[in-house]
Length: 249
Image 1 (cartoon, one colour):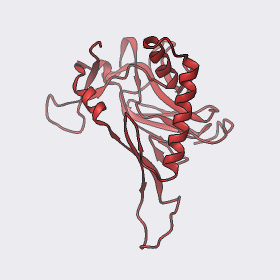
Image 2 (cartoon, one colour; image 1 turned 60 degrees about the vertical axis):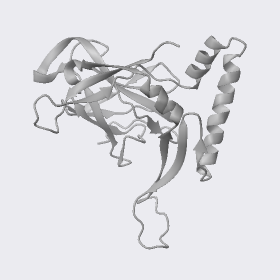
Image 3 (spheres, rainbow, N blue to C red; image 1 turned 30 degrees about the vertical axis):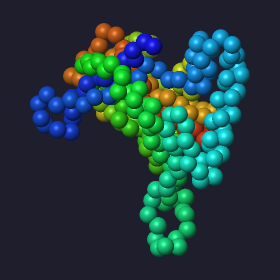
Image 4 (cartoon, rainbow, N blue to C red; image 1 turned 45 degrees about the horizontal axis):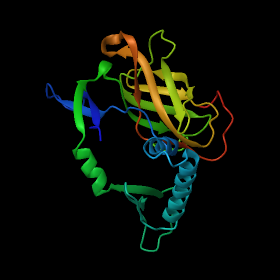
């Protein structure tokens, strides 16, 4: 089996005054879904059909979700998934209040995953332009790095994330998991190095990955070629799409 490699981009640590102090972020090489897994399996095991594997993987995902929603801990070869609750309760008999409490899913990597990561070759490099996304905030839902609202505003915080340059590939994009089509966001209100505010179009329910592409770099200079940064956490649209509203603030 070929040796796996991961690249870590090094960014100046803005939280410390120590000279030469950098933080690292793993450079993502794309996303993988059940279709990707099915295709990879079929490359190694030609006796299987991709659509059959896809069907099994999708059924397994749905069943694991049902088990989690039933309060069970779900063990897979990747690790252990379990449901947790956040927020404080007023008294030992206080009811669950969706306004104050939230159910989340925790994940603990399996021994096989941890072992695989110890065998990865890690390469470091200076981050081109220092572009990085730190957080994504949905003001309508008051949620960070989680759910987003179709047709509403989204506030993106980071470093050197200003969209600048004439290259047509520049912009803020959402890509639905399982699709290769990028949907471009409309910039409104803020287009600053540390914060962007974008207006989301009408989006179908599902999980999305956020990408910023720009030629901006520190000192208000422009890079010759655009560079991109993809935010690792998935952003989720729930329910039916809301119509676009240009007056949303």
